[in-house]
Amino acid sequence: MQDKHSIREEMTFGRYAERNGFEAVWFAESRLVRDSIVPMAAVAAVTSRIKVGSGVVNNWTRNVGLMASTFSTLYDLAPKRVLLGIGAWWDPLATKVGISRDRPLTAMREYVTVLKELFRLKDVTFEGQVVKVHDIRIDIVYGDKSVREIPIYIGATGMQMMELAGTVADGVLLNYLVSPKYNREALRRIEAGARKAGRRLEDIDRPQLVVCSMDIDADRALDSARSLVTMYLGQQPHIAKAAGVKESLVQEVTRALGGWPAKPGGLEKAKRLVDDRLVDLLTASGTPEDCRKKVKRYVESGATCPILYPLGDDVELMIREMAKGYS
Image 1 (cartoon, one colour):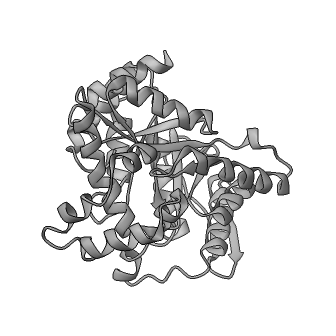
Image 2 (cartoon, one colour; image 1 turned 45 degrees about the vertical axis):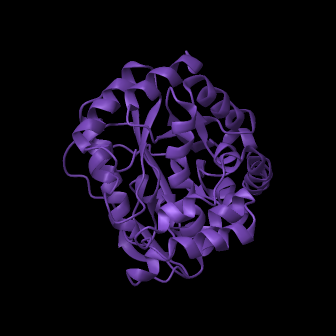
């Protein structure tokens, strides 16, 4: 979930997903609209079984001690139900708030290394190239003082980050708006990273974000997803590159949008460049049956569990209909 619905609506959706047998609900954090921590806590507070995850927070705006403290607090609220998905963020947003994402692989490796030690409630001193901490620990005064069992997922798009996730993380959060074909290379790189740590591919959890635009009217569902696909092609070209979209199309869409945020009328102009075939390739859009079949493609190509990004107005319809495919 992200920001199309109010937090109180998301609390209702979380309870509904739990009743329908869903394993987890994840909250995105990308644009400067809504953070993921508050809705995670809200849903955790009104549920008892379903897991809550960040999909994803970044490793630049919260120092590693604050991140560990924040997720330890969530763990107090929902023991053994918290999942930490963390990513390297994106430009131009990072640049616009004064952050230079230098040495992203080194930064992520060091950050995850320190997080793991803090979740084990150890005293940590670490002098890395990017992450530097001296004599810190999570100080738990009240409640459960046991080790925080919080799985760490790296949200990866590029193949070097994919391999790193296989080496140091509990799982990798596969991105959305990529084709199932992209997953095959991703799995090879995750497995290569896992071998470096003496693990197997099967040891690495691989949930995948999948845009799900569901409507009784398939054409309306495709058109709804087209807006999101268009924005990401123009504003996050690294995802477009990973999806195998032609550079010439990305450039055309970028020019039509006119920057980030898009200029007035830019999105409507750019949408005309994105055809149904591309929307169908990169999303699970259409009727309920269409969506179930398309989500299945991602599972068959290596995702261990789909994380559905709902675009339709009727989120409960999506929850109910997608539950049929896993009941």
